[in-house]
Length: 262
Image (tube, rainbow, N blue to C red; front, side, top):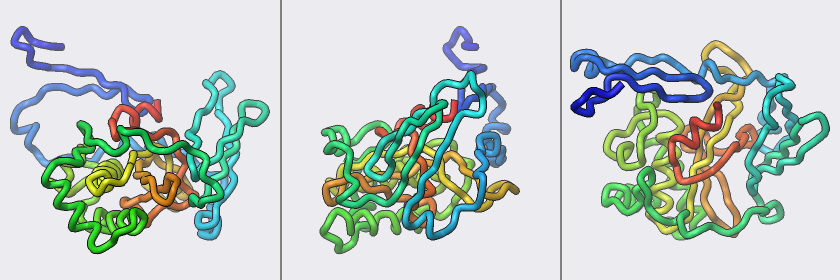
């Protein structure tokens, strides 16, 4: 609903398979402390069993299928860390393991993977300064990205779900948020150092979340082109492991993240 003066009073936004209704409110309401409704709770996927630390470190094979016969075919991203094979009866096999030279299966980066955009403002002075600070004395791209992952983990001091979805520059100015804020900032810092990066949207295995145990939750992390392959870096958690299931990758646009759970 839009008034004659173009002010928006009501807006409906599809998000993670649900319809979010946004209503205009008073200044007091808008500036009140953020509440913490957790939409992720509605999107949890139970794991049939607990995943061991060894499985997550070395790699694993996961077979998934839709719970409803009328559901569309499941789609996942093929990456240098994730091999996707279609099986009978609509099932999909995922083989996930940390990237190595032997498993490189993706093409080289595109020009856009090195350039700033509306969500990864890698040319902004604030981002360039943070990238220089975070990379430290490291020279090789892999070493720089590892330093940057550790830096972002420390830099974002307030870790919660109150932000929604911020751009890298917004996070640089206000270091708080969840996995998406960690991912966009890390990807932007990598690009600021001349390293091709992208943001991956998917799921991650968590031992416990919101009172549930052994679940996969919506998640985002960064990938960088290092040593001739795409390698994942997760600053929101303690790095990448085989509990990460990639649905798509791209420029950090929030609609890609939300579309994955529709």
